Amino acid sequence: MPETRYARSGNVNIAFQVVGEGPPDVIWLPSMTHHVELAWESPAHVRLLSRFAAVVRLLVFDKRGTGMSDRLGGAETLETRMDDIRMVMDAAGSERAVICGLGESGPLCVLFAATYPDRTSALVLVNSMPRFIRAPDMPWLPSRGEMEQRAEAIGLHWGETAFHEEMLRESNPSISEEDLPGFMRVFRLSVSPGAAAAYLRANLDVDVRDVLPLIRVPTLVLQRAELGPLARSGRYLAERIPGARLVELPGRDFGPMFGDQERLFKELEAFLTTITAQASPTPEPDRVLATVLFTDIVDATARAAQLGDSAWRRLLEEHHELVRSQLQQFRGREMDTAGDGFFATFDGPARAIRCASAIRERLTELDIEIRAGLHTGECELLDGKASGIAVHTGARVATRAEPGQILVSSTVKDLVAGSGLTFDDRGTHELKGVPGDWRLYSVATSR
Image (cartoon, rainbow, N blue to C red; front, side, top):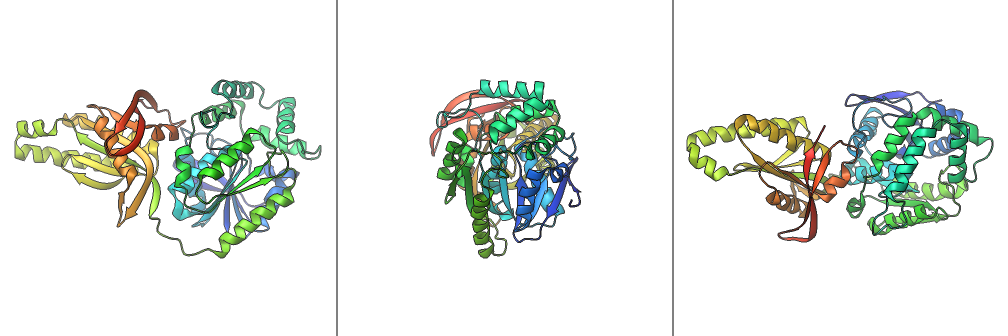
């Protein structure tokens, strides 16, 4: 068994192992449950990990709240889980890696690749999907009610041998009698019943469809062709990720360690060989996924006239100092300051919202009211400055905000599932100079 190490991500310890030598480095993100040490007692997991390690340097870890990683640490958002990936890479001395995810780990991998292209050499999605509940353009997915019922069943029966056996046989019909006990043991002991149900419920609002066209790294979508709705989701991913290669494999086993593993790894090895041959020094990304924040002071002109130039200038200086302190706390990057307004970018939408909320609250000490607008999209980077349609969209969202209001686009809302942030629907709007109609939401509460 490889040595289990820990990476510190915020206030959470993430258990990880490094297997094999590579190149390339591959981050393997299993679906839902995993235990880095118990996996080596499961013949099925050993087959998979050993096969990986024969051709790559494999970094595998337990998601926060599962396996040997800490159970405490707050919201399980895609944003915090992206931080976990980066911290594991840092602890393992990995500058760039192939991000490879199975099933429900797919949206996390998609978001990471778009947000950190400088740390992502390629993206591999196995039997995955961009969201988990039905949408007009994905009518084959289960309804929210069906997924809620599944979460309830997991909470009630997780840990019961018959429940896990039925679940595994249904999703992996090729599983053998030899593999079943060890695989079930990893399932049962990697996460508690309540945590498993909560994890599933947190994913119900996850949606990275808007992010798919923004992927700029080589992408392989591996899909078992007889998985029904999952197979359709794989095709959906491949059609919307620029340049993605779709490989449909025979069989209906969800786990890559079951069924025709040889064919699956043949395709994966061919892809990784190509990526390694094309490897070059880490580029400076000219396009990244980012959340843009715009703020401005309500009735600034009238306030300036009331106070006079000297007092207004002093108030602005206090305003700027307070805003910058909050940007630093929430990892925001100041892009521009024009008069009484700020433009900043963030590598996570929940952090951006919490920063805007903190700024709004702290500015009451100065008797200043602001409005704020946020959008997540692709930004072009030039000389440390961000530009592009996402920036224009964020600025236009801000103009729609009422005094004291923090207004966000639907893209932002879809990416902060599990954050504890809640929203009020503010309807559909046209944004000047930005094509299409936009659904906007105001931030209601946070915790």
